[in-house]
Length: 371
View 1 (cartoon, one colour):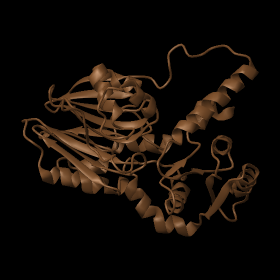
View 2 (view 1 turned 90 degrees about the horizontal axis):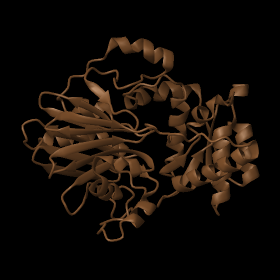
View 3 (view 1 turned 45 degrees about the vertical axis):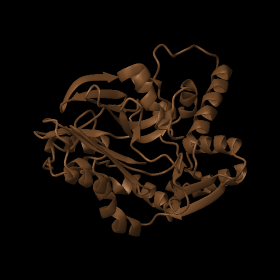
View 4 (view 1 turned 135 degrees about the vertical axis):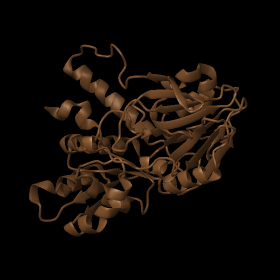
């Protein structure tokens, strides 16, 4: 993941370097491989980079010949296909996040409709003096904003907005019940007064520090349900799963998988094994002494069956007490789900050798819990 942030002032002056530095410092843990700044009349943007694609020339911000600038957090999976659509354009890099600039020049504020991926994007057009913020339709990548007397702030995390000192952190007590019932908060409001979320699939246009337009697109295409017999549907499912896993593997750095004993990550592993010549690195968290909740045996057997290199990581009570303060500090948009602990431990182990892991998140929602 990368980090993005910025500020559009109300008076047209350039944001202070102190504000941009505060954003970079707060977002540094999201992008340890580099940082970039854009500062102009009325607007400043920052980027902290986790380098995955185009390691040599993919530093942000990106610029296009007519002056638009962009910072992005995410992965644009169809970037190769998008580059092919603009053979005459002088792209400066091989990054997956540069093509959206040229989509903007071709399609204006509707540019995000052509993206396939997970992303939070900030794009500034100095000719129109407008800022566009866009979030992927599934809401995988986060993007937050706040409107203050000084201007419009945005960032990948609420804590980065608070770090600027332009908004005092004040917790909304009324969200406690929602958090405890659902394990997270929903909709536009966060737990902090004045800090909002961009909704999944939303693009907002900001002029002189004020939102002047909102549009939103669905994650699912309209009229997409087609009656099919079971075998046809299964064959189609196999095709789209393989295609999805293949584009998720577009990376210039090594990648692996978080493997549980469940259906979702097991299917992803099977697809990866079919697509890769080398064994997949699969990481599984285990809970010693918990019996049925420890899925390592099933994961181990599946990894052996497909020829994956299996890494088992034990999560104990000591991890809870040692890591809980650190985890809570990172989750500034709270999630009351115990799974954040084993996921954090697993990520720490995988990060010793990898920057990218695939996982089975979303399967329960997609297949309605397999009920």
